Length: 326
Ligand code: ADP
Ligand code: F6P
Ligand code: MG
Figure 1 (cartoon, rainbow, N blue to C red):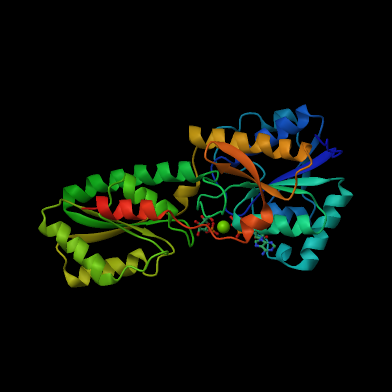
Figure 2 (cartoon, rainbow, N blue to C red):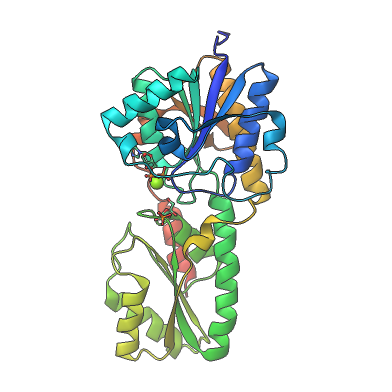
């Protein structure tokens, strides 16, 4: 197998943070060091890259972070990096710091940025990290499982109070334009309805479902609304209240609480496997790829394939959420 001549790599987190980014950083740093490769931490995503915010990472720098949410390297969104000049500036900074390849942990936007670097001669490995689970080609991204567990915990609690007061709750989940978190939560929390961006749900259908639940003597009604859905949770609640559908209605926007917290066992292990594989891919000379979870395996998938395709939701799960919501 071809052995890389790379001596120094950079590692960074970018875009929205996700629980499990720290275990991924730890795995990248320790795997690289054990193979005699120096690691430079790039702070604040692409913003830090183009401003040269670099720091050497030793094995102790990643101690005690396995169980911590967020990212010790911090993260950011950078408008400047989206411009060709911003990218050239970043490449100059990498070159002057002697960074020969970069491991980028982030979402679809961050991986798109990674492809731009790869195309301009910087070897890149991407690791999918985003609670949205909207990245093509990987079954799961780092942070999704933890976010889902936070959502489940919240909805279980909301159901308690909803039942006590005979109320309908509209619960807004994150995910940007992707309904993954909402669909999964709808299934495993037993929601009466799930509304996602991928499908248009007419308001009449929502009102009918709530009224029907009331008439059938349900003590509560939980409707999960993905943040990207056409009609948002507050608008829906106001209209339902106006129509007098039986239940009194309340809205809970789960918001950024979904992005924090200790990574679950699943996320820690996935992030660790991704981090180790990222360095292994580099060592074998494979760059311009993302570590992708496909079934039980982690395989290299070209970044161009990742960013030029759109992930679609499982029809089977959408159907499951509908059928079980009775
Ligand atoms: P995420 O990676 O979580 O999807 P964003 O979409 O905000 O988050 O992307 C993170 C960062 O990646 C952006 O702030 C920008 O610096 C970089 N990025 C996103 N899209 C592009 C692009 N088309 N070209 C270059 N860089 C990009
Ligand atoms: O991509 C992660 C995410 O949390 C999305 O679910 C959400 O739409 C967005 O980031 C929120 O962004 P911000 O952190 O800038 O409020
Ligand atoms: Mg994204």
